[in-house]
Image 1 (cartoon, rainbow, N blue to C red):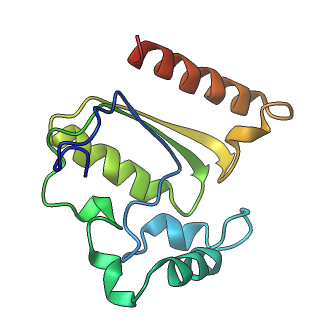
Image 2 (image 1 turned 90 degrees about the vertical axis):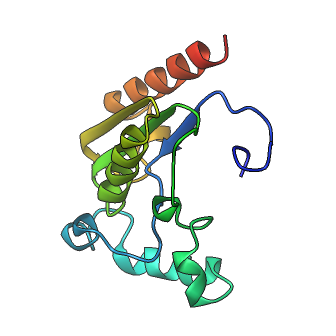
Length: 142
């Protein structure tokens, strides 16, 4: 909306295991439906409570993967986790951004689950992700 309505300039999109299409379920929804913290049923519950009505799921304002064009959006850092129902839609969004000419750095932390980033005191990979995010923000906000 900032792009389309003359809103503030956004230096960088930082998207951690993003939800980019609430109207569809990717292969990773099936592969990691249970047992990896975030579940498919949990996501269905969140989506049902988020939407005013089910038909809103296909609105690109809710499901940005469905936007007619992603051209002109700010650069993006997209972080996904290998064992996360949201992994594939995060990757699909990165691919669409890249296809639209947007600079994208997408990193999938293969052995991680949804929500791992704040676990830096316990998981070295999470600490590395935080370092990447901080460095990306530092570079973008110069």
